[in-house]
Length: 82
Image 1 (cartoon, helix red, strand yellow):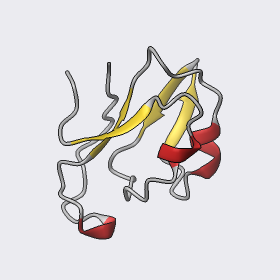
Image 2 (cartoon, rainbow, N blue to C red):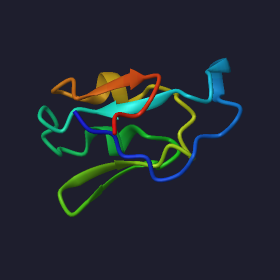
Image 3 (cartoon, rainbow, N blue to C red):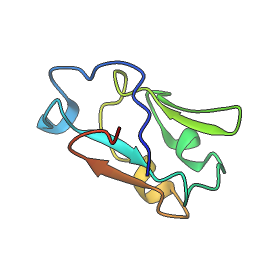
């Protein structure tokens, strides 16, 4: 399981979340279908060269991507996996 963190997270998050919250991508389960990209209101989920990227700096943790993922590849994590 890998996480992509492009930048440091914001200090204050939507929904009173902690600054250490991240969307975790399980690349073994991800089908790169783009469902999460289509529902992200902040446009922080993108597909680039067959890789799903999450811009954590932009992410407000609205969680719309979680139920949109047909394979369950997305989850919340308190820290990114290195």
